[in-house]
Amino acid sequence: MKFYDVYNGDADGLCALLQLRLVTPRDAILVSGVKRDIRLLQRVDARQGDEIVVADISLDANRSALTRALQNGAQVTWFDHHYPGSIPQHPALTPYIDTDPRICSSLIVNRHLGGRFPEWAIVAAFGDNLEQSARQLAGQVSLQDAEIVVLRELGVCLNYNAYGETIDDLLYSPVDLFRQLQPFSDPRDFIRASDVFGSLKQRMQDDLEHARALQVREIAPGSAYVVLPNASWSRRVVGVYANRLAQDNPCTAHAILVSKPNGYLVSIRAPTAHPTGASKVARAFESGGGREGAAGIDLLPDSELDRLLDAMRSAFSETV
Image (cartoon, rainbow, N blue to C red; front, side, top):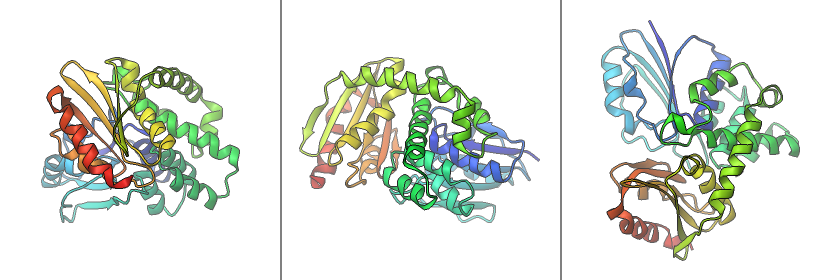
């Protein structure tokens, strides 16, 4: 019998799994990757009696691998907030899936555990750009303003670390990072004991300075886009930069494109004032997916750029 923990390498995936393992420690095989590497379940060769926990990756994107795992006799528990498609009805599958745009996987886990480690859920919510949800939970557990600020910074930094085309683009691999987080039931203790936070924060600020020097172009009232160069710093900062643009311009949707040799990597943010529509735009393209407020396209061919801009214009004109 084997245990597998399969999780997105961003703040939400890390913090969702961390909460679960703080309650139920176990020696599991960790399966993760860069944020865009969401077809993670296909790496798991599960057999009869094996147990799999999945955190913060789309069921729809892993459907065939899930079917195989269930057919092989594995037990699967799934925590997620992305578009799932049709959820299989199977006695060995326990899904905790909620696509409300105000929630993330770590908030789902926090709810499931009855609020055992809310500070980690707050870190994740901030990392996923769910400012209102994070602050609401912080208020419920009576955090001070200074504590909220530092938990927000940690969430943003953990999310920043997940963006890249390969693990080589990241400062820390998601597996190594999880192991560094794992001993800490409180993120404030992690911040005090580890130099990871400081290192991530400094590199993130350097990358953001590069991004802010680029021109953001209007598509139409209510939508805009910006193109980043083909560079490691672009791939690292794209998510944080997208969230910053969304926060600074709450009534505008943004598409952030990172140049690739054969097209673009795309991050899409719906307006924070009306956080819906990003997933629909992304899923109109072959490698697109995500959730209502934030989504992406792994490879947008050069020839499809105009179609993306038209889709942004059409989807978000009503939010103006």
